[in-house]
Image (cartoon, rainbow, N blue to C red; front, side, top):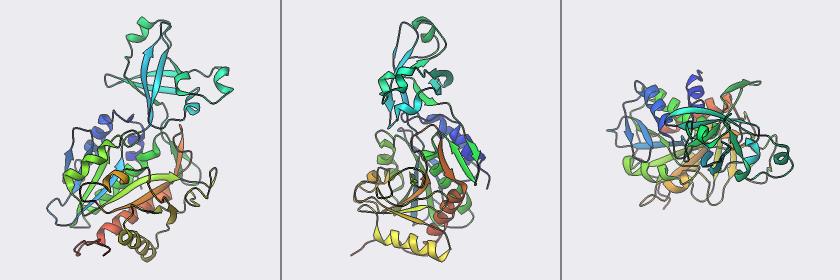
Length: 343
């Protein structure tokens, strides 16, 4: 499988609140691979095929990433920030960063002063150095309100794995876009790949995309904690990198969909793993499930190491099996009236 699309997604800064550039990249990459697009002022976008079908199935993955926002420019030219999403401040110490200013990239570094290495760092302690010495010099390059992400791209590791910034959830976006591209010639079902925005902060995109599609059900594709290196297996499940997509059990998950996914995986010999989130899942599924009369959802997650760090790690095998599972699940509804009622 070609991973050039994933490489482009990772190399496009898309902090929560400023996702427009990555949506433009997605639209350009997919314009000859789908039938069309729906867009929303929130920044969310939907790629679709077979829009006239009576069966409408939506796949959802969020295009935003965690980051920082400049809040203050000091007289010495150093920049102070606050967080946009669940950043781990300690992982930013000593990192190169990209600042988005008027759609251009300005480079900087976050100093690795010894005082920051001796305690648990707070985001307010992170100072971005642009290489200037005065506030006036800095203000020629950046502004308060500019977004900041770590300057890290995609790299290949051993054992068919990939590392990079924002694999949460660029890996999910990659999977739903590849799935709809391949399904274009394989199904007459209406399929909608929704790349949402704001998942790491407000969840705003997930509030709006159901209003456009009104799907029969939604497949949420996100990442989850692989605990084979670090982590607590008792947190949600014994999830390992490279052993297949993860199926979530819990309150918001539709039981019929859940059983369907498990049975299809068994029938098609697709390896899967299991985890439990009894209440909220911390994904776009929490919002979509509650849309109007309620939308049935199922959550398929990609195992990921080092969540919300400069270099997250996923397995190519898990990505390929996630795409295959998405395709087989959607194709199984080809000649069926979708009824997910449990009563």
